[in-house]
Length: 92
Image (cartoon, rainbow, N blue to C red; front, side):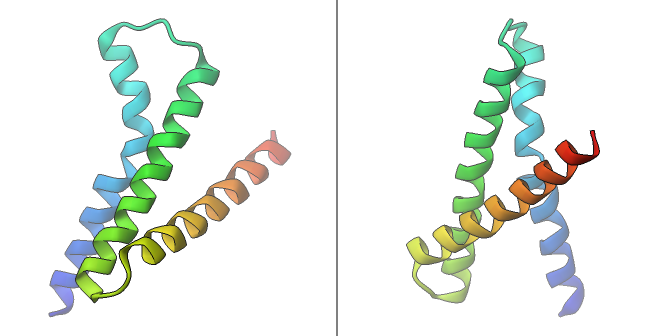
């Protein structure tokens, strides 16, 4: 059913999309004094891991190779993130 697919997509965006922000939220909640650059690197690493994990989950559902699917998702997500970062940097 289409509504189930739509709901799964929405929930994936909410759950997996919140990972980069969680780095900053957790750092503030813990009261850490980490530098912004360090938090950014941690957020990038957590996001990369999450993108790979999303690809592995997708592979389990589609019965394809988990490593290949995870790597492809990581590359696609990395390219999209790099493009968004580059556009933001140019507009700044």
